[in-house]
Length: 139
Image (cartoon, rainbow, N blue to C red; front, side, top):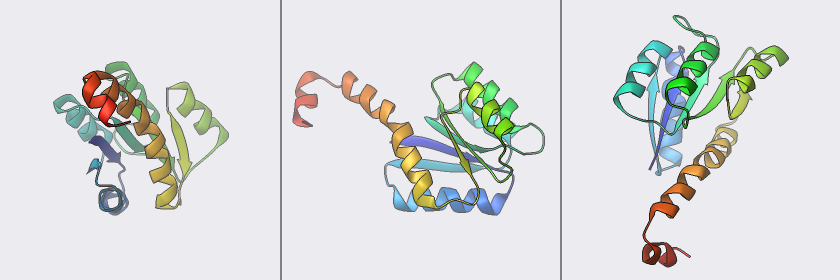
């Protein structure tokens, strides 16, 4: 199971993205959170493999949010989504350790493809931790 957190201050958008991801991908455990301060509380309580976050949000910018995640949970993969894309935003995102950058509006299939790539390192680590006999059954 890959744990995913969708963070966006547009409650309807975050809720719908999370619901679509859950419905289309049973291997994902997805929650929607509506501001980065609350998202950090969730991260303190439980680890998440992937965080999908907006850039422009109240209380904390998406870039500052990502910096905090990468400082405290460096193995968490980050996907930025924004309706206000710019070269500067893109560069800032990648400098902070963002794995992918996607501009709104986007098709859910595109986000799902990015999640599949972002989740691969987790799958590989899980297989490496599995006993040799169990791993050979999967081949």
